[in-house]
Image 1 (cartoon, one colour):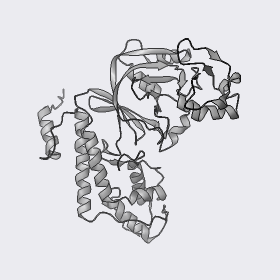
Image 2: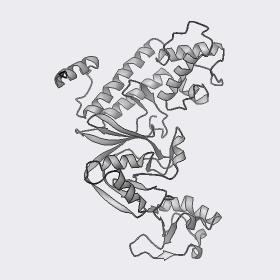
Image 3: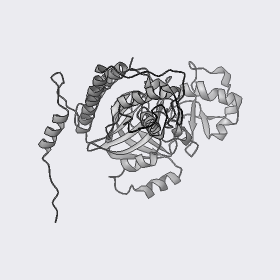
Image 4: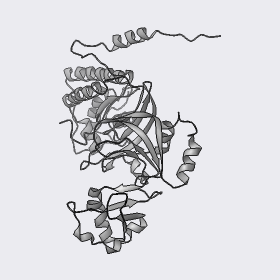
Length: 384
């Protein structure tokens, strides 16, 4: 019978800090192990980019070119050099180095993946723009995000839901490991998703949607004016207020032209169902920003690489998987029960026996578990 080799935890930390030593200027860290690992990963990346800077950085490519497989150009030589410097290309080509071959195409795809770009192997405008960002700028970005990661937690948290806004991604971290990951949609620049921490307290299946006044006035009323049947088609009812005793009104009797942001006092509510803008599942962590996580009927939006489409809330690609995870320790809540509740098409709230911390961050640079250094576009201009 084989015995599994057990390495003492202290020895593991000794090995870890031997590889990624603390510097004199580093503050004593109080965060959890997952975040500690992330901090030192990005610290290691920073050292790599500083070494690149000391050797002269990397070459720039002209901004008005397009390079793709089978092209032959002097610019291909520059592209090879650029990708070799950051480790995206490990050169083994012994032929014509001015030929854009399959090896170089794979290196471009790796670079595109690390930068959240469309992974097609074609060096077009967006890929060129990312390639031409200077090493000095990348070092500043790594330093800024290292500080953001460093400050994330004050206490040890065994599990939490992490939403990274510029990555358009939700992860569940448990015991310092990533156990669930999915695409997310975040707020557009006019209605930014806030950065904060809270706790997920309950889930709503088949939610109704009380449409915010700002969205009603700016988005819904113009549609109603063009298409009077819109409210009926979308199962939206109109009430004379937001209280429990509010009375339902007939949309045809309302003078929509008379309302603006200053005087709108009605409430529009969309009924539960497949057309509901919140989808079939809503994850609630009551907060001052009035944002939450929810499903969406617009699944096609997850095909986009950049997904800043919402009014501030976070829409998720796999709400059923997230709900199943959140309820996994509560007796009787398996996949079949969740589906049966959803099929009833009636709103139902389920409180978690143990709230799950939620952390919404703004990281435009980080290092993944495979050691790849990732960068994302600064969609809210928080880095400047």
